[in-house]
Structures are given as structure tokens and as C-alpha cells.
Image (cartoon, rainbow, N blue to C red; front, top):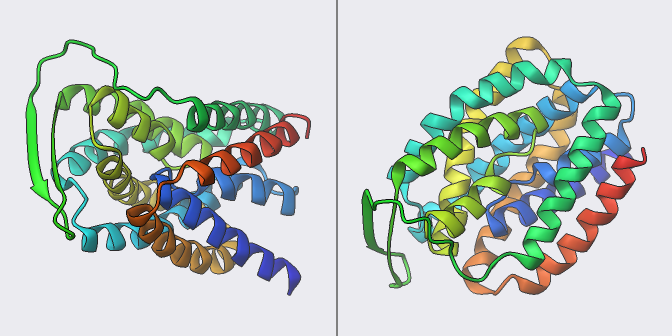
Length: 264
């Protein structure tokens, strides 16, 4: 009973924290499973995390759709490139050793935590030609105007899909920085579009893991409802509040978790 409540609680935390910044909740689910179920092999941890992420991304996508902040054209294009990478990542996860997985994931968490706190304030100018220009108004009347190079996003999305599926994290932790710093997306649009892209990619990744029999569905049973609820809450908070304090607290927590994983 206690384990079930813990899984539900961490599902809410994962869904909320992942949705509020568009990262997806895998960076919370994977360490949670590693600590609560140390008997699980890495491939089952990543598979279960991806299944939970699917429910989280469904919830967040529904909420962001109501807010009219998803760039569906960009999200579909990025997902089309991420999906092949996610299939390869799911297949490669079978060959990861336990110690290598935890050290690699711990280093990844440290990178994400440092990015959340020290990310550049201004976009990076690469001098690439603009291929897409967008202008639209969200549900509360805010107008967003931006332009980007679609092909850069497509190329990066392939590698994002691979790493996301390999580690079971969802691609937002790599896609959101790419969209905001390199493709010049407004942060709110990047977070919303990222969750839509994760949703499309997670369908394929989860399906691949399901066919292979790697998903621990009884864990998903308790994590997924929490992730769905957390996704709704995170999307609502993201629309109303600056997330600086939340990001700093989350960053500190990630570093602690990362060090624990590395020394596991």
C-alpha cells in the first residue's frame, strides 16, 4: 500500500515538473524506479518510464491545446524525425549495463539541472536561413511571432528521439533548449510544442517496448494516474506563474538524485 501511494505521489511530481517546463517527467520517474525497485534491469526502467511519459504527455497536450499554445506543424515535423531515433534508442536500451546506465543518467541529470539554472538568457545566432515564420494568438489573447530554420530542428530531433528513448526520459529535456536557444521559439510555445512532440514520439517508443515485453505495467498502473493529474496542474501553473523558483528547487533535487545514481 505504501509503495503504491509513493508511486502515485512521484507520478504527480513527475507530471507536474515535466509539464511546467516541457521536459516530460522521465527525469523523475527513472530515478524513482531505480530507488524503489533496484531489482529492475535498465531496459525495464526505461520502458516503464516511457509508458508513464505517454500518459503525462497526453494530459499536457490536452491542457496546452486548450491554451492554444502548441505549434502543431512544428511538433509534427519534429516528431517525424524523432520517431526513427526513438525506435533505435529502444532497441539499444537492451544492451545497456546497469552501472553504465546509472552513471550515464546521473551525468545527464546534472547537465539538465545546470541548464535549468544557468541557461543563456538570449537565443544563439547561428546565421541559418529562416524557412518558417509563425504568428498566432493563444486562448488569452497573447500574440506570438517567431521564425526558425525547420531543417535544423528536424536533424536535432532525430538525435533527441534516440537519447530520449534510450534513457526513458522523453525528449523535452533536449528539445526545449534547442527550440528556445537555436530555433528562437518563445519559451511558452516551446514547452507546449515539446509536450505534443513527446506525445507523438512516446506512442512509438512505448509500442516498441510493449512488443518486447519490457514494460512493468503494474508500476504504470500507479504512476500514470499521478502523471496525468500532474500534467494538468503543471500546464496550468506554467501559463500563470514564472517558474524560476520552481526550477531552482528542481535543479537542486536533480543534482542530489544524480549523485546518488552515480554512486549507486
